[in-house]
Image (cartoon, rainbow, N blue to C red; front, top):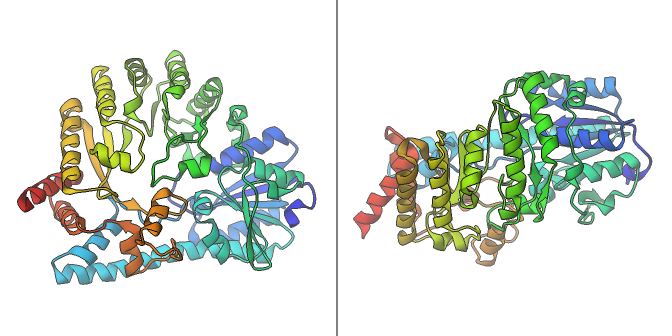
Length: 498
């Protein structure tokens, strides 16, 4: 492979267009390479900031001016569905499959065609940019990483010509191998050779305790970063997830072993972002900010440092309130925690166990009590994935009861239920289970959308599908908090059928 021929002297990172969000991935990759090989020239190009019609020219101009040896693309996500109540595609799907109104079903089918076209056109644009780069610059080493590649690696590599290497999961060590001209097959890569897809070996996790981000250096190689000044910036405090939730990909992408960054380095970064980039909001971009009891000392150190440094920031992230202690709740409130997202999934312990969620509802409630006692003023978004495997009428009623229990603890104004449906993705236990059960064909294409595949991939199976979907459709027409309205509509429908 060409990536193993010789040492490389320059790397261009290209952030493929997506929803506007600070490009955390290229930041950590380029910083790591700079730390290990400071002589290598680097540049970041963010295509999200560039008009669609000008993106290919921007790539050509940048390659011509910067003359990189390596072009490393990052593809953040392929959003087949964001299957929650704020996604219009969910409402369209439910109208098409479940509405009693023929007019609404017809309107949904027309709008749905447009939605599928936009989805496919987004994929097509990125594939075309990759193909044009491979064709126009055959002397360059072309890499592709990011969440989309990690999840849909086989499907994406199949769509691309030979000559591009995909990096699955963490990319630091793989890119370092490319820079050094050493054997990349010792790392977690995927590529096509003579028409056959080949894989590298599963490499050891990156030792992220060594990673300290030099944001002054990032500004020098990414001058367009000023577009994100004053916005929310993602900061990783750890990588890895010890849980095996059946629908989640974090442990597949980052590994099961939780690795921690130095709390002092994290605080120095936040101080710099506050002083130089005018950042006032931080999103801790971890699988979970508190992934287990063993992580509590690390989280405690970070929060105490924020307080001791008197940094007036607002921070947030994914938090398991089931792991909170009174001390941690106090530190969270004192350090400026904002609105929180909690993946409760279900208010039924039976369904939680079925989905291998790894927590007990009683502990989650206790954590909410700790936060309320400490004077927490933010909102808690409860992500409920209803009609998950194992769901029954009884477990749905338990979920509604759990929502009411949290409201009784926190107060209605602080609790926001968000209704999700599980989107089936490759490399998850849920996908394996559904293939084994015959719900999915082993040969299904996870990035292909059709009326049949959408109904399968948007997991809402019978016998509860119609009751739930029509409760959602009714709630979306009502005033007020739609998540709560859905809960109440489901409760009423279940009682009416009992």
